[in-house]
Length: 111
Image (cartoon, rainbow, N blue to C red; front, side, top):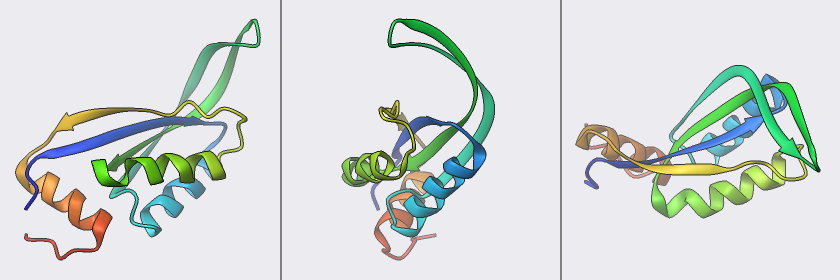
């Protein structure tokens, strides 16, 4: 049992297809326990200009010992030159933390 700590990793993608491809690869590789895709519009400064584009935000649930490998996988699969990868450490219920750890490591889920 690991307790109730997870990492929520966020990365905007140009479309739902690229976000789903990254999400599926991350879950298949046991680098993420789950993924949520949300459509929206991103506004940002890039190369001296302000841009606005529709994007799909990919939110991945992972654990600390998988974070670096997950960032590497996203950088490899992402179509942007510089994918905006950010994360926060989040408290979670002990059951959720245990589930995320089991999903990312392949260890049996205690629940």
